[in-house]
Length: 163
Ligand code: NI
Image (cartoon, rainbow, N blue to C red):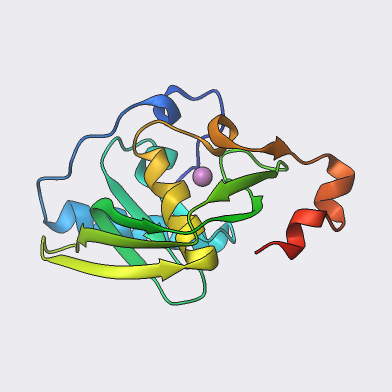
């Protein structure tokens, strides 16, 4: 296991379309393990492979419901809307208000290539949308409603009551 370096805004890896993962072997297992360890150490709720410089459709998420390892994930259903805070480990010290679906249904493969589906709501749904955007080179700053000031990041904003 190893902590990987999280690339920051300006690194071209963050703006690339990632390729599907086709090989479900030891290399993928190690990547997933490293990504989870890196995410937990950075106290994030999600991490996408391009954030560690790997241009593959691989994501880890733990929004309080346990670790989800998603390979080649796709959102197959979206429902409702939520507006709230969002940040990104590749944009440290920044936050924005972003509107996302309230609920999503996801189809993905696990580390062995087996397909599975699950539903996510609230923060988990937000994390899914955010991380899957990374796989297409999209960042929250591309879709945000507004960026928070440093004072707002520390304090309360009206959108905190919206979720
Ligand atoms: Ni991010």
